Image 1 (spheres, each protein chain N blue to C red):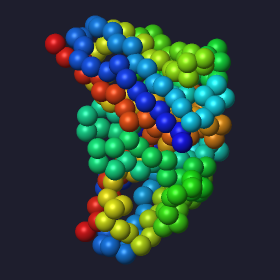
Image 2 (tube, rainbow over the protein chains, first blue to last red):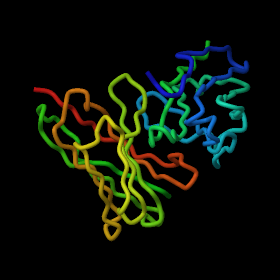
Image 3 (cartoon, rainbow over the protein chains, first blue to last red):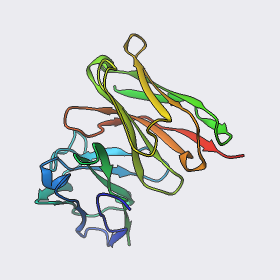
Length: 111
Length: 118
């Protein structure tokens, strides 16, 4: 059971917009710790996609955006492309556990 | 270019030990916290351990506390993970990752596979 809750899967047609939710609690996201998002393409290492809730590192397309409110965060992918098929993970820090925590991951499928 | 290269994984029997290494290049290694994150086959990501810039402060996930030890040698730009009393559930790809002050993991290595099996 992950500390952060994500849907197991989302899907969309090319060009569509999909969103992935990440729900935490008062000891992590709700305690004002930032949420970060990672993209893991099949067979590769994770890559930082969004840092500090909504900041895109250099090289990340602006089709990817993040937001945070209360004890939840979300990742949006607009103009979905075939190359976006991957697993996406949210991550934060938990002050009660004194540990970095991940969601279980969401598999994005492009129909 | 930031590069992180892990090594030291392999097949080990339950109860055995392995020492993983992560060699860093392309940035000032001694200025960053560093982490180990693992991923069991077909599963999600699990944070394992963090070490601060000079190695004086370390923290661990409960699942490995007392069995794993993280360390670093800033002169060699290298981080280590000594894994003892290994269990089947420790089977995973172990990634090293750089930890900026924002509490994320901004660069990852390619990972090294640890398989615990008799």
